Length: 340
Image 1 (cartoon, one colour):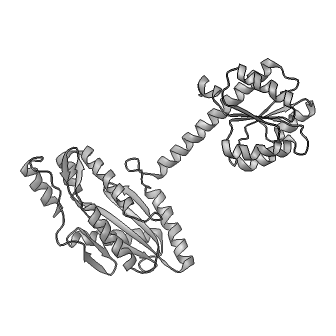
Image 2 (tube, one colour):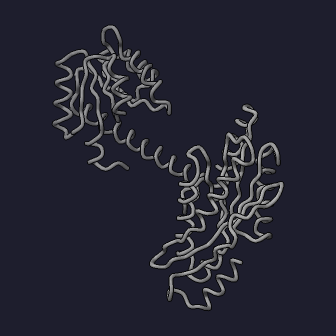
Image 3 (cartoon, one colour):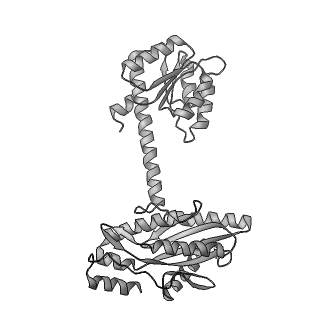
């Protein structure tokens, strides 16, 4: 629930064509402790002001010349796409009250003003409005969590599949290609076994950041579980457009990692699948890229493979290592053996 300070700091706009009514309402609000209150006598300004400030409450007079309150609410509905209109209608006409509610106002205040009614209706309205915003924010956060990996913040498999489908549809319309690159870290298990999962998690976060920094802004970098990542490249003309980035990604991942005073290393193997050359559906593209990835691992790791063959990215695969004296020699030997 919103606390009292949040309610008193809420953004309020008073709209009335009568200066005396505005002065009276401003005085009532300020005496009650509301600190963020503005006013206008020009109804045509309400929508532009709301777009700019996103008010928590609009106290709107219904009877105004040229542009009345009902017309203003119609414009506000176009701004509030989620359907919640933060309008408290002000009217001296009993017949307007139900019409105002039907037009989208959340409540009304009768003129002439009754001080107790004004205080209670404004407080209740703001409490509901701020709670609605809290719930909307929470819902958005939950949706983000459902579509993103909680450790790295990258898209997860669910969002990845949607991004691949979108890229494939675009490629089909433009008669171009889409590349799916499937990565799996070499030697990651040795780091987890030697140093613990906290170190492994830090490595995963650093790998994720390196992949994002080494990819185009329009590409999707996703983590789909464990030490597996997928990168989707749209607007690809030929295989060579994916091979150069693949080599770059392998080199970037192989750079040393600094974690809690230790210097650790690993490498990555990568499989490339192209739409429509290798597959035409999301599932098949992932399957082909995954098969190419494991061919890269089978033929030596630290390299990429495509449907037509395999290419080494370096003459020797980097292995997990630590700064001198940081890890017992037996543990280093075990990590090295696991990576090669």
